[in-house]
Each structure stands twice: as C-alpha cells, then as structure tokens.
Image 1 (tube, rainbow, N blue to C red):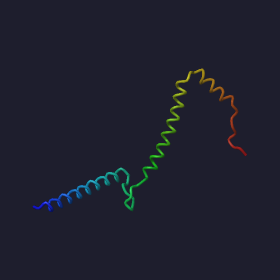
Image 2 (tube, rainbow, N blue to C red; image 1 turned 90 degrees about the vertical axis):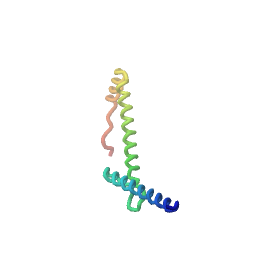
Image 3 (cartoon, rainbow, N blue to C red; image 1 turned 30 degrees about the vertical axis):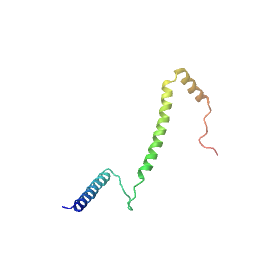
Length: 97
C-alpha cells in the first residue's frame, strides 16, 4: 500500500469516529432534554438564561441565610430589643391613594 492511500484511510477513519461520537453526544443531550444545536446549527444559549436565573436565586438564598445566621448567633437580649423596636414602629399602609 502506498503512503497516500494509508493517509486517506486514516483521515476517513478519524472523520467517521468524530461523527459517531458527535451523534452519540447529541442523542444523550436529547435524552436529557437539551439541544446542542438550533435549526441553523449554532449553539443554543438557553442554558445561559437558566444559569443567570439560578445565580440570582442563589444570591437571594445566600442573603437570607446570612440574616438567619445573624439571628441565630445574636444574643437573645439584642434580638428581643430589635423585635420590640419593630413592634413600636407604626405599620405602613398597604395602599397609598
């Protein structure tokens, strides 16, 4: 066999294996409810929106956790004083006309 023929066979084998791997990845992504491509073949950016939403949610949860940690670690006397000061504050009306 000539070296040119061996080279061509190797190139064809690499391309074939690549297409098989890609098809397997696309099949696995579809099984999990994702799409690797849109109709034009460009990558899908749906995950970026989900990622941003989840980051905001995590940030809010971290803030809430910080408040809960502060409540749990504050001395009882200080916490009681803050609660009483909130009770003494007049409530805001629900609607302003």
